[in-house]
Image 1 (cartoon, rainbow over the protein chains, first blue to last red):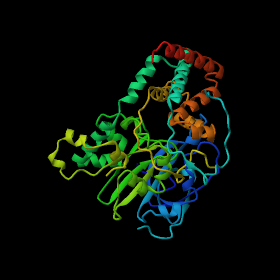
Image 2: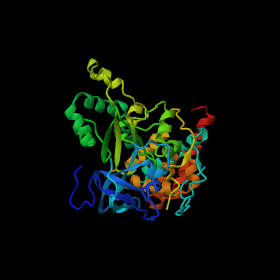
Image 3: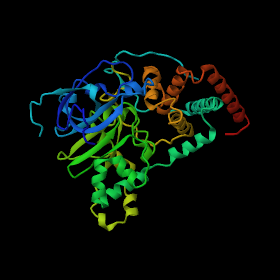
Image 4: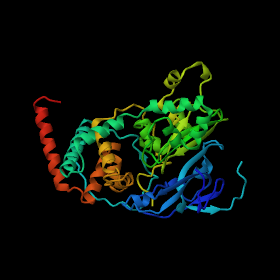
Amino acid sequence: MSRQDGCRFKVNDCVEILDLGKAGHVRIPFYVRGKIGLIIQYCGRYLNPEDLAVGKTSGPTIDLYRVQFNHSELWGVSENLSQDRLVIEIYDHWLKPIEKIVEES
Amino acid sequence: MTKGNEHDHDHHDHDHSEVEHEALVIEDDVGNIEGQIMIDALQSVLISRGLLTAPEVTKEIQQLESPGIHLGAKVVVKAWTDPGYKARLLSNGKSAIQEIGISVGEAQIVVVENTPTVHNLITCTLCSCYPRSILGQPPSWYISKAYRARTVREPRKVLEEFGVTLSKEIQLIVHDSNADMRYLVLPEPPANLSAMDATKLEATIGRDDLIGVSR
Amino acid sequence: MRGYHDIGGDTAGEIPQQELPWLHWEKQTEAIRNLLGDGTRRIISLDEMRRGFESFGAEKYGKHSFYRRRLESMIDILIEKGVISSRELEHAVKEKKRVWDENSKAGIE
């Protein structure tokens, strides 16, 4: 899906996943919080599951992105191969922009 | 017999460091009978409140039973034999799947393509998200805690358990379907693609190919 | 905040690969949740059901099967929202169990 007006991120942006410390139903797993990844796709705007879980269906909708991680970023030194990747969907309010330090190969 | 309304408000961090999850919890006969009694009781209460009818439930069960791997196989074979369709499928999975007459209940379907140097594997660590409206119900191992916990951390080991050894040259991409997208793997076509008709080709595609635990 | 359901990366043993059948009560549970969540009813959404099993306690989450968790969650949310009462459900369960036991005695499956 193409980026819409108001999207904070574009493909290849570096992002950090925030830990918002929220109780209740969230769809951002523990293992990616505080980690740095790369935006690889924009998915569109969806109602926030954190709201839907308590019956709030009036919105607003939130931008959703697919973010890619290296396994070393997630698990430290791991047995996974350096080229292997993990991709997961993250809602905009869980994302913080990061200055890219090294060019991704 | 347990019933609802036991409120255990667990809102603090759970220490996962000492936990090794029971791989898969299966109901025994007593549990299954309890389950049947409870859902029948719930259904009767909902009917008496005018919220459901029995024929609606029967029809919905039939709807749940009708999708299956055969639908995923149709999508794959069309992508293998029609490059324009494949491009549309990879760009917008839901609309391409609907294009061939398959209805899609999920918000969006992301189709991820296997190549000679890339292999894709699908999981849902938080629950069991799966493209049910196309493929039907996921297999019990997919919803097991063992699969959910381990695929994101040691995917190559998980694939070994399924009999798949990926060479060092292949890039393995694991997709955790945690939000609104649902995923289908587009496997590589067979070498003798042009020698087979669509029906034969569809018969070669299995559920495990579409999830990514086979190659 | 990390829920007990948030298990990505945890230790676990071998993945059990036996194929299990999808039982009638499990399909019925799924069907009823779908109907209750549809456009005409909007009584329980998927996210509300997920919230239900993510908050009914780690012990329950650990001991119940996948579909039983969804059934328990659905019941909790319906009672929480006042759609049904626990008393009427208890009564219905007692009645269904009585019929089941009678049929079992009579030799009917």
